[in-house]
Length: 524
Image 1 (tube, one colour):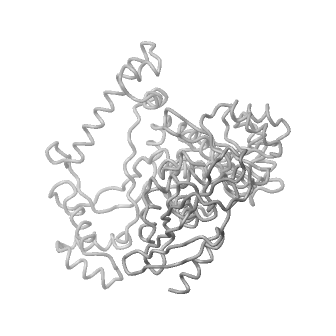
Image 2 (cartoon, helix red, strand yellow):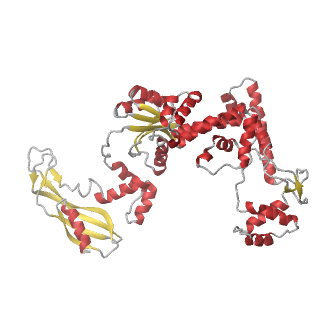
Image 3 (tube, one colour):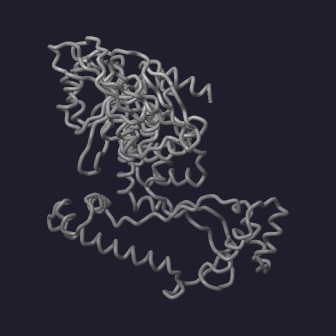
């Protein structure tokens, strides 16, 4: 305890106080402190005075010690000013080094709450503070954040990134500016108009490089405020625009994609069941899927009918109370866009599926026995997985006997999956290698629809953005020449690939979303 009080005594000595007594008998350690000096300077005229006017106690919460809360009962004296011409008659001695005006906690505890709040936000910081013995609430943590003095002046930024973020999605947006060399946000303000961005840029003439998206407002703001600055395009936005445009094209190629999928055989002669399904034999989820398809088909026909009558996309969306994007997809699809079936991912049973089909063909109908046999063959999965597989093979569409059925064809994949196969990012070791079925599908689609051969340009485009080390020498020159054909702003896109300063602003734009969640949007 003497060491603890010695540490407190050092803190109190900074403001002319000393420990006179302590009480640790209850749940709280109470430390009383008295003054060691006889005079104090007036804050108005700075003249020292020893004419005592009165005294009072301030109870300040200090950081806990020995897992117990600590309260400092500090004596504060008031003096009469000795200067007859001073506007202040009385004043209190200064203890700002220990606690600010009207504060009920010491500066050290306030700094601890500020650090917790800055790292975690209001609610999370309050929960952790209570565990550490700092009795507080989320509102108190946020007040400490707002009360904290401004941050130290940082060096002038040289490379910055600009992006927008949603304060209230669809209604109000803000702009975030990130120092890309120090990897930290340096400014957040409401609005994404070029006037506000240009005003901020003029106040920071040290900026040499600006990474941005393709928004015209930011481009004009940089041109006006910093015409000599180099503008580069953010790689995240390049890849996002690439995906959106390719998926939009593939969405219009729905019939061609289904035709290409029918040309891809995914298996030889296999065990299955033949027969025509009746309405009553279909499962509940299949009937629900049919109902939803009929609803979408009716909506598609209504949209196309209104479009044929000369209606605009926005007018059709308002009349049918649907999203503008839905109307745009229907109008540009060319035919009714069927939903792609859900892709079935790989399972530990896939290597043993042929053995299960063979045992079922031999007449075995006991999942427990098949599971025991699979365990001897190295299968480590559960019995429930084997039972589910056996049931699906035995009763996929009723209790018809198993027979040999012809080869199966690939189900039509979604536009997003085809985009990944076309662009070829899997070849860049970003994902696992493509299967032979995927390769055959891409080849069939390119033969049916020549427009899908844009994948060659997009492949080099995506590779250049994701792996800069691949884009050197003649390869970068050829890729830059290709961008002249596929974009309207090739200069900023060409600068983005060899630059190491892009692709950060979008990630830091999530700082604004995190600030909203943690309650720090009002604090800087």
